[in-house]
Amino acid sequence: MEMKSCLSCLLVSALWILAPSASAQDPDMVLMDQLRVAMDNSPRYRTDRERNDERHPICPQDLNALIKSAEGNARSWTVVGRCSLKRNDLGTAENAFRKASAIEPSSEAFSLLGLALIEESKLDDVPRVLRQGARLNPGDDQLFRAWGSYFRAKGDLGRSARYYKKAIDVLYPGGLGLFETDDDMATLGDIYREMGDHQDAIDAYKEACFGDICPDSHTILNYGRELILVGQADAAKALVTWVPSGQEQAAKQLRAELNDRRRPTNGQ
Image (cartoon, rainbow, N blue to C red; front, side, top):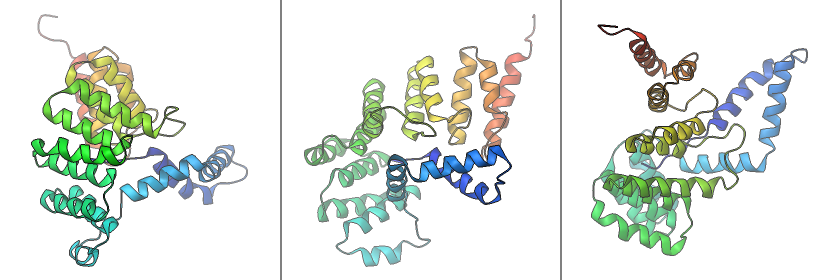
């Protein structure tokens, strides 16, 4: 499923919260306030925030009112589709993206339709849909992401990884910057992990996590497991030294696996 996340956005939010209490006498708080101002004034971060606002719309509790008012509005149908994907209402998502692509054909609409079809395991229909999107904008990062998801579902992990890398290169041609992360990197780590390519998986997970702070429980657990597999237990331990709210269970699981690795087996 297509999803963008931005750790820099979380950081900005945290800095906003902390900034009012910052004392001019506290160098750390002054530095955090300066970082917040610099990020707010950065065109790149502003574009990143705007993209995330578009791709992560605030979903109403009841989509029926939005569906009734969408009519000929492609953007409204896109919001319906994105929100339905989040709720795993795949039939509604497919229908919404079909309407959006019919009203206002775009690579985004066809890419999202392709992703909905992949989630529904309607793989035979996907290439035709994505080719329609490619005719409109062959270099769209969302299109590359959809192809990556398609080939992963087909079991062609090498091609899947290449398309996810293309999506990342489109969004970040100069590479990820300070405080930037992208959940395509975590997906890329998962693909390398499925391929048994441990070092590339670790490299991708490292990019997906800012420092030792990962965007979600799935990533922290898989990243830690890959580190353990290659003998980097200390690095895995650093991941669970401090974790954001909601990742406690994953951290607990990773600690248990670290302890199991250190526990002597019979005969040792």
